[in-house]
View 1 (cartoon, chains in turn brown, orange):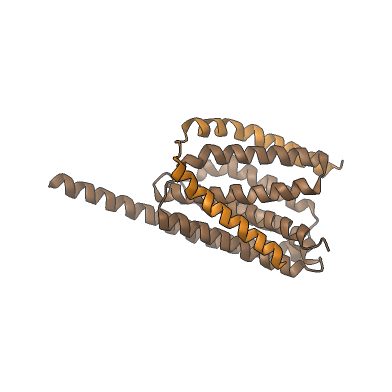
View 2: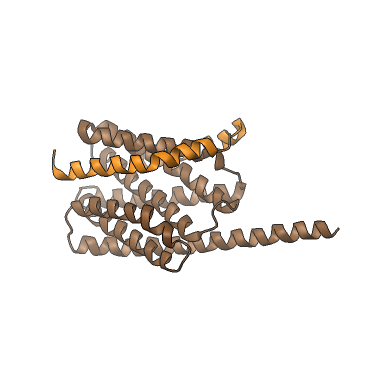
Length: 223
Length: 59
């Protein structure tokens, strides 16, 4: 009997901890997305050159890979997350300015933004409602992501527009998989650090948005 | 080829080299999914693909 009570108590405390991580992750994610929007608007207002995007992405990724893991368990980690997401948002400015100057630009940006939100919320809701364990996807998604990076590297030299369209489509599918994988890891206690969980989900949203912009930009201007 | 493309290519090579060991580890340590597990992944991805196709139609 005592053992049953102890099991129930353990399960409920684990569920409370999971809910806390989930709530903190979504709270920090909302704030970082808002902050990215502000830095993107600032970058558009300052008319930053296109190379800003490349510098911001490389800088943001380097900080996310090498600096953030060291501070993820301290309050400095939150500041670093804002630094990374602010940089990535700032890098988006010139890209958004370029799309905004297209004849159909406003529509492309709005649809990409709405589409990204719908994909993220839909997949998160699916993972939360079904509570499926997607941990088996880890290796598959990482291999897919590496192959995409290799294809992107090849396309820098090949410069084939159809290939860049294909890469964007595959990135959306892989990032969708990462949303399921990351959300499932939080639900099942695989990720207990909300700072790292936030940056993971932020990166998926960022990549889906950029890829959607590219797909809709190419497809919306071929007539 | 301009300097931005060269820097992008070097950054991609760096990310690939950094991610390679983590990928190998994840492949070794990931659990194997059943066909039901894979269907639970494939169905939402197909929905995402159809949704993107709808967005392309709308633009």
